[in-house]
Image (cartoon, rainbow, N blue to C red; front, top):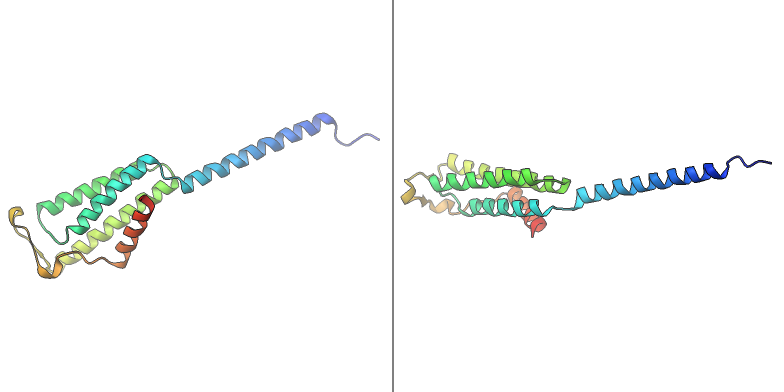
Length: 152
């Protein structure tokens, strides 16, 4: 009786199985890196952006040229972090930074529409007593904590 598979067929199937195993392990490793690794370039850019956003938040309700400069610096830093994103985790951090900046800008806009900002020349920027600091919403607080936890 002749075996249904000869030795050459067994070697070929073993090579195909080994190749498929290597491909599977490689795909899983690539996926793990994409999900878990924060690249050094993104980490640096994201920290810079997070510091710029925190400075904007901590500036409170100061109006005028200084505030506009801080807003533009924060926007530029977030854009730099977005461009530096290479992995899925990098992209998630960049999106979190964009959301955090947007929430801070919305809070500042809400204060402006309520009349809590006093518009004066840059040399005489004043804050009203009721708006010494921006009120952190649950969203901005949550985003800030998550980003600091991820980047620190």
